[in-house]
Image 1: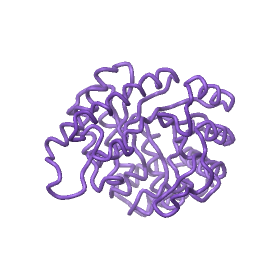
Image 2: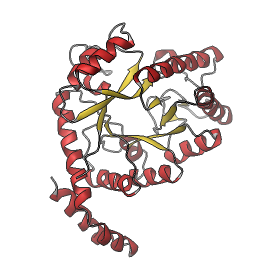
Image 3: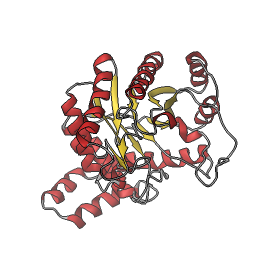
Length: 326
């Protein structure tokens, strides 16, 4: 069996709050605490780090020391362009000064990517969008989204930039809200170092087939990264990968393997009430079983069933491979 590399967003090991438990679901943790917890997860090899680092003032060297003692490396840096400073948008903010602040924040994050020799800068412009009809001029809004990303990518041609699209939350409508819209934007930007980070949960909450979305991004040469989790489709619940939609997640992995996509299988989960180490370990156990199932999959029989659009025949083959591996 070919075992993928497994990763996780470092926020998986942080503590959380919401609009009800405003005092948080547990005692606050620093990013160092989170890295030490991530190090307890067998088979976890890479992490995606928020930047600025949370929980205190930490240097890059301090973070690297913590990573080294836990045998972890960095896959990406996620600049926080979605916080209170950017409530009216980062790249699309009506205030040119705030747009400039977003640009400067991501530019600083680029140097953090270089320090850690990470794969990419991850852009999640969660506040770029709108909430009400007539609130924004759509043409201006979209062009600012493209200009914001395009300027950064052109100024840093040695780095990859990945856009993590999402239909909604925190904005009711997000500018980069679907795989098709994001690919259209990336093609309009026209730079080779801009791609997609496809979050399985974001795809299915948006009514997409994550497998189809992955194929579309691959066909355009733009699938630079991926996250896995699960949800009930109505919201970005960030539950354990495979807990609700295992067969769809298996199909997603099948499309990646079919296209010889060899990136990290990364967790983007929020275990509000669960033990973060146990939750990550459980998720990775499922991912390992899925990888084993891909090796057991009768691809010839599957492709023959697909050639006839034989839904039940194809499902039987996929289910036998996945559930037989667990």
